[in-house]
Length: 113
Image (cartoon, rainbow, N blue to C red):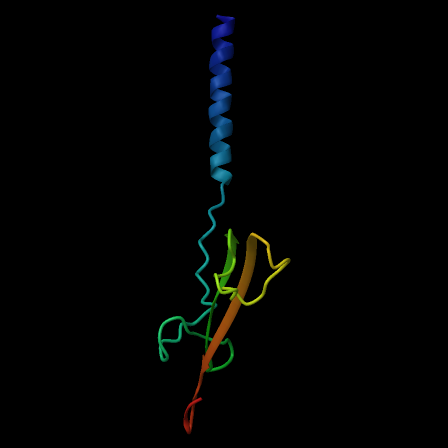
């Protein structure tokens, strides 16, 4: 009988402790989403307003990296790329290119700037 009462007492204590913890749980309300970037549809897709101004900005560009093996030129000696690294007789080449473009637009009294 002693083991049975010990097990029942332990179960009752666990239920009481877990119930007390559930009462202490704090529910936090979800914050409202902040609007950091305003979309500018006046000049087309991809534009956004610069904060604090009425100027629209669009950023674009690309990164390109080429590696080639074999004959890096043509039969007449003209090369197929702008800059050659290494020897004229090299059998491989590499070329990297990065382009960043920006477009802006703003309405003024005289029209679009």
